[in-house]
Image (tube, rainbow, N blue to C red; front, side, top):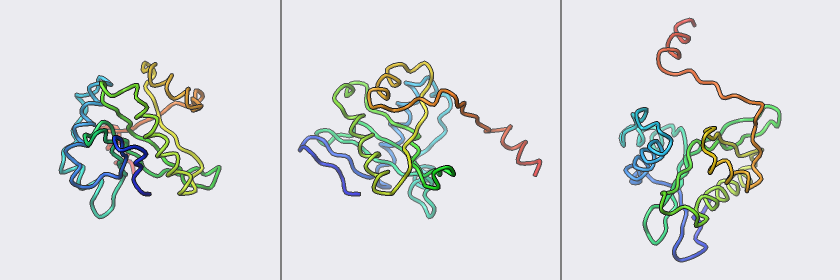
Length: 167
């Protein structure tokens, strides 16, 4: 998909390997906002390998305002067995605190929605922290449907290794 440039001041475009320092900075800022900075172990090298290596695991788009990065979205393909179609899962969406309220987050989501339509995806989905009411309100304003009947489950670290060892 081509970069979005609906004004001379704002642009969204796919990230490149050279954007890894910016991506890492956004990840750290998001982690601070979510009170999860202690969990960040990502490095520029790890991002280069996982996002731009031989088998990329995810994609990133960068939003720029007046030639400065102001936000990003990291996403990957998932799959719906019920729809028999791929989907896009938005892992992270972040806009600098001082740049919020200008519609940049909505433009990032609109870009992903357009990408999902172009790729014939059945849906665009993401998770939001229960305490993050501003984000929940924002998503509701877009007619996003909260999936209240679903609970995210996760295995990581020692629990992931322990289960893997049972194979």
